[in-house]
Length: 328
Image 1 (cartoon, rainbow, N blue to C red):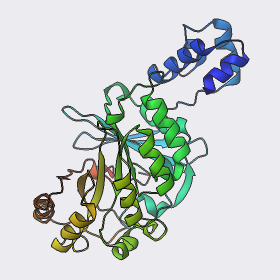
Image 2: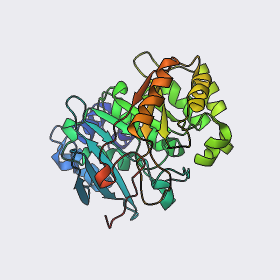
Image 3: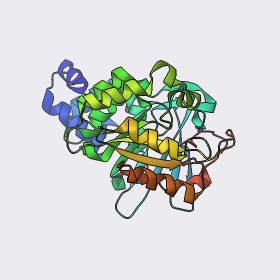
């Protein structure tokens, strides 16, 4: 619609706007003069009035497991990171929605740098269009730096561009947005049906969760779970809960029992993620045996559970390790 508005002012219509979107989002063009199917005079006008803000990462690191971490500098001078994780069938790109984060989760490295800025939709999408593996990416997760629902307008816009036929035509079932669960935008995210939803849980006990995630004070997980019971996603999409396993903190049989209790009646899946350590935390990951025991307890209690294998830990690209330092 925005492209149509611009084209209309210049005497053109929706057909030209859709062609422009095709070149921007499918072809990743970096200037309007390369959009051959558009009238030359329109290309010239667009070149003079608009800026295509795709830009390349300033640094790349490669993990021993094949994960690549990309460092980007935003127009305002902040740094963000994205990680590409190749696999036999799934090639996943983990992208950021903010420079820094204001949620303050105690286990997350991003939290230690505080909040810097919200990313525009173009900055979110740039993490996909500007990397060499763009054509290989078939899964996108909004699980990098920042809380997506704290920048919901730009996240929603980027989801629409990713999934629309005039945009990048990604299947909604191949996109996941991870959130701490801010009620109003979460409700809208459910209604849009543009992605899978992953809610950060990390403890079934409110006081303990508050110590790990300060957002619990403003938006208790109990209210989020009520929303999850009342709302539903299209059948092709999945609701999941993410649970960082912390040794001696939230990995006991009592936690498993309470977790099964509070998730009863919600059609969902639980992803267990052993903590990925970093220099700014004293928290530790459980042993592999402890993690598998916890998974078995949940499965026995009827909770569908996966124990996630972390990727890119040797280059600080694993879940919770992003810090976007230009000195790395």
